[in-house]
Image 1 (cartoon, rainbow, N blue to C red):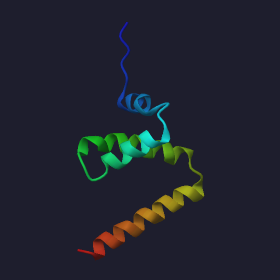
Image 2: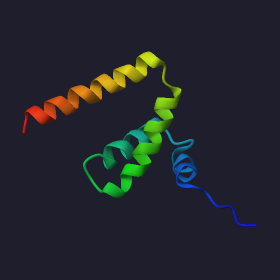
Image 3: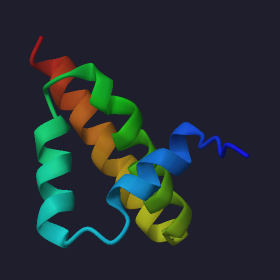
Length: 75
């Protein structure tokens, strides 16, 4: 019987048991480059979000809002 992995599962399997340096390299190598990497970053962000406290989530939103405002002001 063939096992079908969904995108989330495939990404988790790809990074599971990787050393921190490999995960950092994967994230940094995906930022500002090929858009095909964006779903992988989304899955990693989803994992972080689910594991975060409400305070940590608010910090993420605050950081995003700040960045969005600074990018908008730069235009």
